[in-house]
Length: 352
Ligand SMILES: NC(=O)c1ccc[n+]([C@@H]2O[C@H](COP(=O)([O-])OP(=O)(O)OC[C@H]3O[C@@H](n4cnc5c(N)ncnc54)[C@H](O)[C@@H]3O)[C@@H](O)[C@H]2O)c1
Image 1 (cartoon, rainbow, N blue to C red):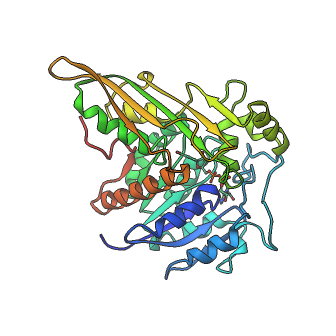
Image 2: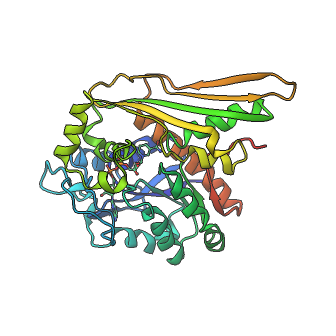
């Protein structure tokens, strides 16, 4: 495959690791990376080692996103361990008032854009995609968002993306993402899928500092919170919630886009998909093995459950970023073949 230049929007817990994992994939050259405060650009390829070293322990996980009407100003923010904040700590980066616009302006030299942005406003990623389309971008865009309702917002933009020549791959992290794809593959044994059960386990002790953004978004899935109330929590309040749960938070019946992504790929009805999980922020060992169970009926009348499990040693970062970059490459193949519009991880697997 020809070389692929790509940009990372958001050098937080996920975006930094995406840059790192990209070093282990063929034909991927990161050329731009930004956070809310700055941008690093080098079309010969960013020096990822330098950028990671400079931003170590120095991630911007500020709650606000683009300062739009719904942006919050709750406590949180850049963990500043050095003289500079976030990505501008790297010698390759400089401060910017409009980091995303700077990337849009260079879009003709970027094959793919990975959106590792927060989801505190459900329309933030769709609005960012609009800006790329309006700015004349015509490559691949890929996100790792979790919420089901955002997929509809992206689907509403299908025509806009097709006209622009954008191939948008949505929900392509771990779950949704890797596990959605696994469910679509496991479903191929069946002529009717009755039930998909996704149950994840994440142990995040050593990754906790870097993944506060994800933990905050996960808390929004607890029954007593939503995205607005979770957004307004101070760091101290988040610590108190974690203490209340002795570091282990269990989630049931989450609004995870695996459901709509499997339905739109024709695998099963969204209501037949259940997602839950256990997050342990005080141990690296997974509290439970991440498992996907797909139950269905075969053409010759048997009922069975196909099961897919992740190795307990695989970290959340490995399971989000490996698949995200894999789907990014698949998206580029589609884009170069002239296929535009919105694709989910299950659409890029064997179909029905
Ligand atoms: N699908 C999955 O399996 C999965 C797993 C984990 C995380 N996620 C998702 O990944 C996303 C990123 O999580 P994270 O832990 O890296 O968050 P984070 O808070 O650590 O990082 C977010 C980054 O986005 C940047 N950002 C915010 N607003 C911006 C703007 N207007 N312009 C430019 N940059 C901006 C921040 O500066 C920061 O660098 C979240 O939405 C999370 O839900 C998905």
